[in-house]
Length: 116
Image (cartoon, rainbow, N blue to C red; front, top):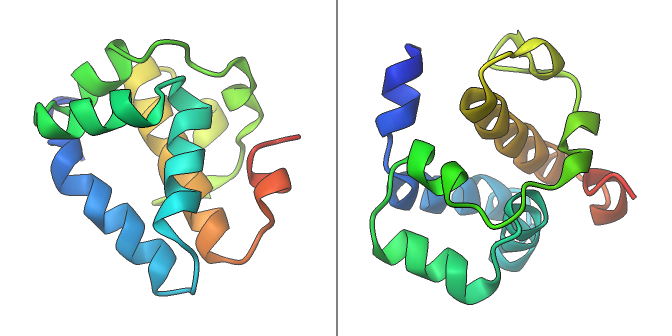
């Protein structure tokens, strides 16, 4: 997928898909939200505001209050791409979020997903 296509994807369109992925494996929206809040530093109101404002992924991550420095601990492949080798910061954060939700869907504990 082209870099600029990921930048312009609406977070409000992807968010329900992340929740559906988790719920298919008996995980919850709250767990997905916990991952997003951990990664971005948004609070629940800030996340809701970003969804309501229909921002794209680039804006979503650029406006994030505080990207968790431990996001660099997210490693492995997502869509055939090694997360730790991605140089573009927006693409890396997008793939980190995807990877963490995948881990959730695969049954990992929140403690492991949040790299505690």
